[in-house]
Length: 491
Image (cartoon, rainbow, N blue to C red; front, side, top):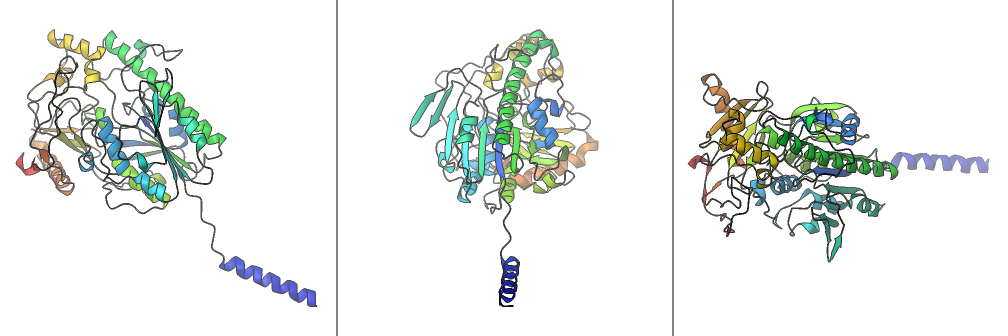
């Protein structure tokens, strides 16, 4: 009886302990960002291009969710990345122009993850400046020249110029007792292009030529070389997925794939047309996202920071201007916003424009209509731009293709994306569209006021010749002061 009494007492204590002990906390998700450099939203199989070989990107979409209406905040490399890492619009980061470094006073979502116990690393293209390197535990920077920078060390990586040479070695260095965040930034498919990077290159005759480019052998060759870099990027995506499997971290890791802006061709990169700002956002998280989902709601890359912080259980910093789209990850039919905003600022050449887009319509306000829609300098030096200038001089471009040379440009543009996906027919002067125009005009003005978006009084000089893309001699290194502005009402 004594032994039985002791045994029953033990069972009672065990039961009480089971009832009062705290439940084990679920493991926080890991995060991997894979950022393409200058890849159009529709230049992979998952988003409809049947000619580019992208089996790994397509696999991500098949095993996760693709976003049909995802947009960057600026179609310009460094402003887009500054916006992404802070959850703020480019003009709010004080790094809205190309190559402007992100100031030390800006708060990034990465430092919040780091403070919450995540191991954080950035590998590949950096383009954010020196002041925020310490927000990561480790930064390994690689540019097209093949160099990788670490604090106090410079390494040579030979001929590798994809930006991905150190992705897997860095991933393997991570501490195994912490959740992790990896910022994996490719250089592909940024210009300049070279032949021979693939054993089986894409054939020019298979290129899909968008209607704003002339269908010529030169343009097709240029697109084929661009496709080759996308396929090389796809191979690196595949290696990341393989390493995730090898480390047993597949199920609880959210992999996000996107591009910082559109393809580096005329009327794409640096514009606020969809060809410039729409991004191929894909999310895979086997533990949290149902496979095969298609999210149709609007998403901005300014929304990624609050989404990641919410999933990590970290408080969203008050500096963040985006909106979490966690609801869309759980239900593709969910909507987190009714409009997205984008901006264009100096990128090789002076220009300034703002855009607001709904699921169907887009409104654009051009602040400097006296300037042509000059493509970025690297695209301006391309074989595509060279043949376009020749065809322009011969009068052989369509009106849509010649639009990049036209001045003045319209101050206002309005497009029905559903009926006119390439944004060729400006409806701003159509009386039937006046209510839509007025509504979007007001939404843009409200956003400008809320985010303190003001037009600089001083224009920044061009750095390159607008015809040839060659550097201009003795370009003044002027950064407009932040104290003198024209406000939105002064347009």
